[in-house]
Each structure stands twice: as C-alpha cells, then as structure tokens.
Image (tube, rainbow, N blue to C red):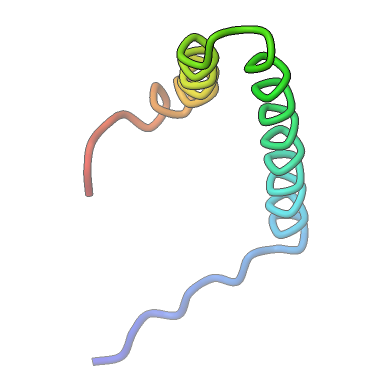
Length: 71
C-alpha cells in the first residue's frame, strides 16, 4: 500500500512560518529581559507567577480555537 502524496507548502506559507518563528524568538528574549529586570526588584516567586500568567494569556486564544482534545 502506498502513502498518499503530501501537499507541498506554498512560498507564502513558508515565509509566514519563518516570520512567526522570528517574532516568537524576539518575544521570548523580551520576556526574559523583563523577568530579569523584575527579579532584581521583586521577590522571584511573583516574577515567575507573572511569567506563567503571561504565557497562559498568549496560549488561551489558541486553546479556545482548537480545544483541549487529544488526538
């Protein structure tokens, strides 16, 4: 039995993926810089809590769109 052929991504989809990866890298660096700055002035526990809340806020739209079902 042969496998079905997979569709190749378009150039626009590839560039969009690259842009998302670059943006996520920049935002990750920004988050780390903010966390480092906060940890110098605030106790580490609230700093980590705020980091996790920020991550949850970013992920909530994706979770709402796709749901929590497993494959």
